[in-house]
Image 1 (cartoon, one colour):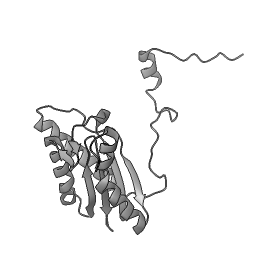
Image 2 (image 1 turned 180 degrees about the vertical axis):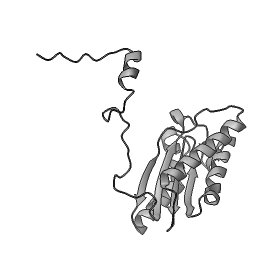
Image 3 (image 1 turned 30 degrees about the vertical axis):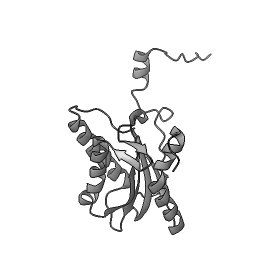
Image 4 (image 1 turned 45 degrees about the horizontal axis):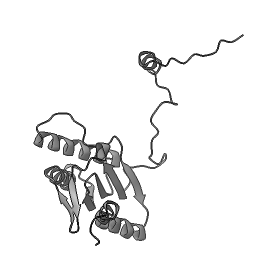
Length: 178
């Protein structure tokens, strides 16, 4: 006769129970399994501010007016190609609570898309924290959205999305018609 497995409900026991790697509890990756993210190509990325706080700017009928934090985020993005030899940037947009961008990895890239995004998020968070006189606080949500851009038509469509996405904020907030 087998005993039934009793699952502990308190936090202390849960921590003990999950101290070993358990695939059923692991965070699921949203990346393509067999895809090489160092491959030359165009990648559409979006990363969000923690709790979707509108820390980076304010949208009005002229676009997104950046806060000091938004300007630091933009500067961190602009400096990325200096850090990664085979990487360049394409369209880029800072929104009040997120960033949209197109990353271009060129032939010979040794850094993956994940490495580029980790560097961006780390550098920009440190800059913003330093500017605000704080240390170690999270600016970005843990992950980021990515999409491999597969052809010229999709590239044009994504560029337009990045360029004009701020208008959606006006529609959702009931702001002025554009």
